[in-house]
Image 1 (cartoon, each protein chain N blue to C red):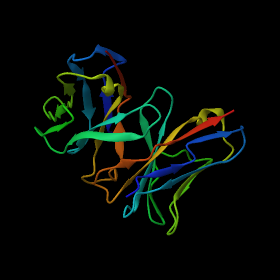
Image 2 (cartoon, rainbow over the protein chains, first blue to last red; image 1 turned 135 degrees about the vertical axis):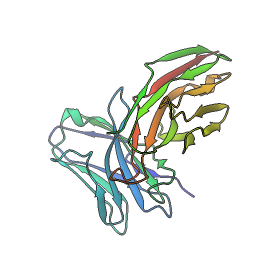
Image 3 (tube, rainbow over the protein chains, first blue to last red; image 1 turned 180 degrees about the vertical axis):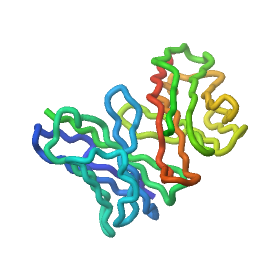
Length: 113
Length: 116
């Protein structure tokens, strides 16, 4: 039973480009949470999705960021027109339900140059 | 809103020393409390959890007790090993209702380094 898979592990983008981060949840998990970890800080919630629905995006910047979790395929976090301040580690966690254990992927480390 | 405060780090100890990492929280309702560990270049792994007051979570020699009266969930280990070197995060989840939707609120993390 594979764990939560995130790819790529490392992503380098120039300012103004788009970054696309993927998260494949564990088998049987239909709840996905995305978190961002800035250098020297803890993780901060960004968005919570269930299959085909965004449930809570209160932690996601209103502009340039979007997320989806289609019926088939991985969850995608998309950052348009990246800026240096977007450089961070982005983690996703999958769960079978809201009040269940969160399993984290290894993260995508985004560097904007 | 919910918040978690961890003791300032980093923490450096010799092998077999006693470890305490303090964690206090602010939350509405009755949150579940967690400690996660992050090894270099890896994602977070659940270390232990407690879901109600006075519960004690324990795993791999680590333990923490959910203290509602002091809103604390301090992590302890009697004898640390070099392999315990990692970043430790205290977190809470208020999945009981409202609009928190079970998301985790994390402390800022404490870097632990254990020397032989």
